[in-house]
Length: 171
Image (spheres, rainbow, N blue to C red):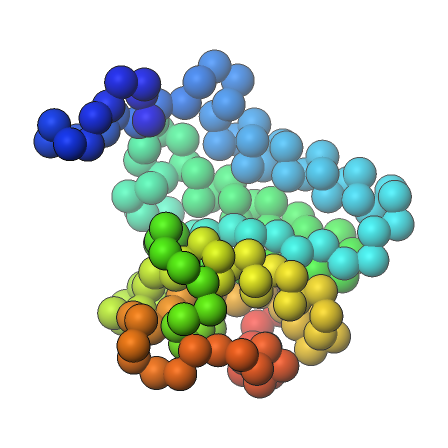
């Protein structure tokens, strides 16, 4: 977002990419370099946070700055899946600045959650799922979409083994 935007004054923020920080360089080349370095170092499990929307090349996020951000993210995810390193790819929906641990988490695949009302999730819940993914073999070599029900609907997720057992997609 360009500096100087004040949301209290209305209007819409203008987004841009700083020189050298386009999605291809960050979300593809940068991720590829990190995956290669992790593999060379013998890392036993990579947890990668991507984004929902990657199955749709016409997703609105791809048009921001003509950066194709979701396309490059998806390419890095595929590179990781093909690398041989045990991985978990988490593709959250819209990120919320809300407290974590208060919502029921929902998993899906191939952007199916984007067709529902449950397409957002608190950042804190994404972070917790990343940590929990390191503790469960069931989620190695898996990729999934992640969202949450609105606060107060459903039961807050505490049993991550049960959540992860719902995941079947390897990519």
